[in-house]
Image 1 (cartoon, one colour):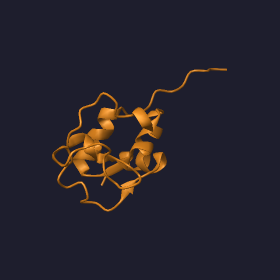
Image 2: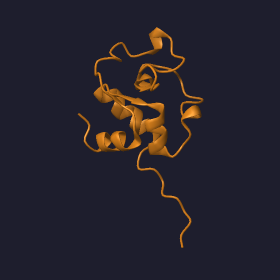
Image 3: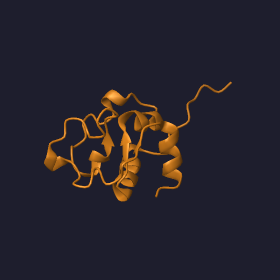
Length: 96
């Protein structure tokens, strides 16, 4: 039996790139699920900027700890927030 875990098909940067390109929000939990990482430290060590602000809290649909000037001005352009790993994975295969 093989005990190795498959590497994620996406990196955090590739997910952020897709979210930013299509102005789509996804929750920390959904992104963490795709990357097989805990959501609490998902963005740890990363710069807070407009590009990364598409990853948001499930509670309010906004990025945690970001100042207004660090948040993309069109953050609420789309009402839907991708909040499950399955939903995000499906969207990444066919973003729109």
